Length: 386
Image (cartoon, rainbow, N blue to C red; front, side, top):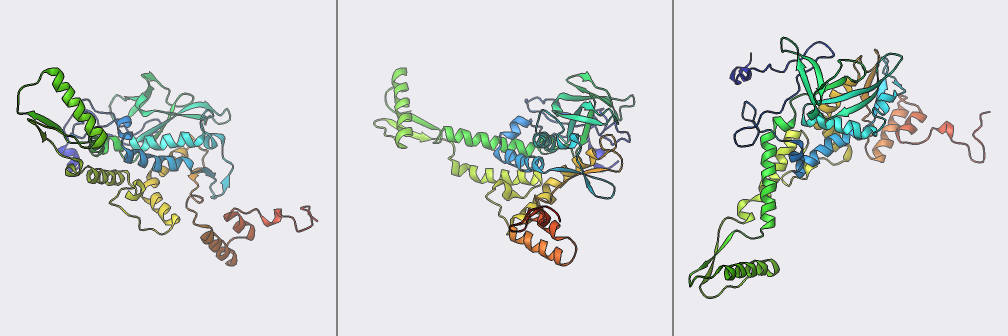
């Protein structure tokens, strides 16, 4: 038992564990109960935020779209044991016939990022081998689980409280994430960003610090006070200045946006969000960050290495398991197009590979999205073979 487990409060609940069977899985993270102040806390005092509140922060929404949205646009390919690309099955080409493949994969990637677990439900199976033929993404908040007798592994899953079969039609394919998800792991950081957004909104809706008009003369009736405040507020909105006379004196309370350092605080929060999401801060346009890369290819390589790789690997490995993909085959994301450099770099690489005899002319033409030379008819001729 490590020091973190030794210091953890004993709640009587089992610790998440990996289990050897396909139907069992890592215990998915369950949102903690609400504390006395209405904010949910787990047993270590970490703040848990909902997806809806997290996505209200521009930096979180941008990070989500950069990571999950990018993964959704990258095509999936299938390969045999000789690493040769083969024709994609329908379940890989378009898992859900009612939803574009990019949408399904984007939301699955988001689930792994936010919740640390993702689910695809088997909607149809192939009569030939019983493997999934149609899959549909299920929101993790709808899924619960039932533990085995020893309460160490998951015995079955439920959707909206309804128990599901462990395999075949209606069962779940569970995509296990690499941690408990940012909504629980970094809830305090995200909640800080939410509060800063709320503070900025309050500051925008009240363009000046709180003010008090002190009447040092005779008392005014309620209607006169209301008219005075309304005219003062209207003058401030229309002209940014106002005029008082007589015994009325203005006293300001609170701090303005510069004194509160809202701009600096929000920029720091954006940098923290980038750090917890595992992507370079300049992807979120954080003002304190700057790009050190000179070309798109290097920037995208950095994004793949530090942000996309964990999510991509979780999806690839699960789709390559025997219950989804036939033995001897595996599924991979095709990153070649995403990591492709500018046209000049592409042409230079293709020429060098061709001159070295590593690839053929037609393979080089394919690298730069040109049609094979054998498919191009000679000038004034035809495409027919001799």
